[in-house]
Image (cartoon, rainbow over all chains, first blue to last red; front, side):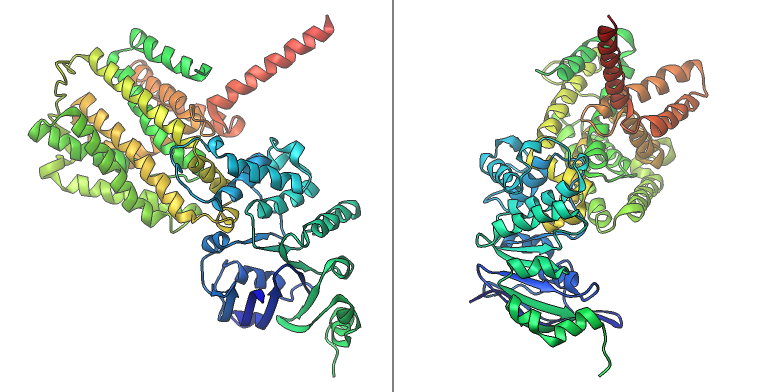
Length: 250
Length: 313
């Protein structure tokens, strides 16, 4: 059964339809990639899924529950966690606190919110540390986020999403702006998460996608133009046109 | 007990020996006011230019009840905290809907609204003349008309406020507010309803302001109209920035500098705000973290110099 699905999801900004009638099913336990050229509407689709703004029309169903129009902070509590394409961390806070904030948000209870000492939540701290360890930043836990390298900030970006113990992990171009070396590391990281989480991955670099994905959906000008296994997608003539030729007159 | 607490305790003991009791008392009152603002300014990153709304409202309400009914001191303080928190809830609810410049202007505009209510409602507030005749009822046989007795009472309440604020900033809420200051979009995305948390910070800060307002009214026996004016709101922002908004203890240092300058130096030199202006410019240009940062930098500079001398020898 699909863990996350959309039905003819549409978002228009004035005359621009950024997402146009997207119907998508993400199966539990799979890594489902969404590819497409820049400006295809991939990030807007993520923003819709995570409640950054409501869709113009269509529905979003998560685990059998209609979550269309639910605000972002509530969607996070349901177990949809995302990473951002542009690094979006808490610069002055330590790496541990960055992950801690996300772990606490998803914690079982907020009792003692105003009065208990924040270092008294053993379970939350443990989850935050585990998330940092998962991305290989455990030894820098006490450094402020603004002092680590760009590549490490991308890893932290992922750790914040992981600390929330997500049921679906939405990754928005985790390798954006990375050097070839760092990119290899990130691909290995994502590969390591595969199977442990249901993952939706946005990417526009074909070579990253093809090795790790179970399913691939292709977006172009706001619409889905193809879906299939990586091998099917590579053979699809329409996809090749979108990527290679841009708009081909027919 | 940490060194900071020892320093604060030492200051509480030494202060009344070195300056007039009224000034010493005012310093701790203003410090409580600053603690409340700093939860918004330093921890949540919200520049509220309307803190005197809560300070003044509490001072008027509790002052009126003290004057008319000579209510118990603790009841007056409790009423002050509640009035401060409730007025902050009203103002905050409107302000947190917006951010940045619009937020600041809203806090300012609503402050002006409260000011003009106080200005017009002369039968209760006395308008421009202020509301005089506020007493300090005795408590358990202690006569608070004695300046030293009142100083001890205020200093004890200040220490209690500081302890409570320390608990709050070290709680999950403190961390969440800092996360909101650092990146409100991400804070929302990981699952925090940002406007609600900002409102909570407002309400807590309002409670502290209210407490300070009542103590102020009892100290001077009057609620002057300025207590709810925008200059007063600006003063507490000023003092907190000079002290250091990045630290729990910054507003305390700021309050000390500000009140000492305004009460002691003003007697000698009436152009004293000039000094304040210079201090402010220096802080903004060189020490964004205020006195607290200046102090920390001085120490690290000394350490480095010592280390270098050690190498030279």
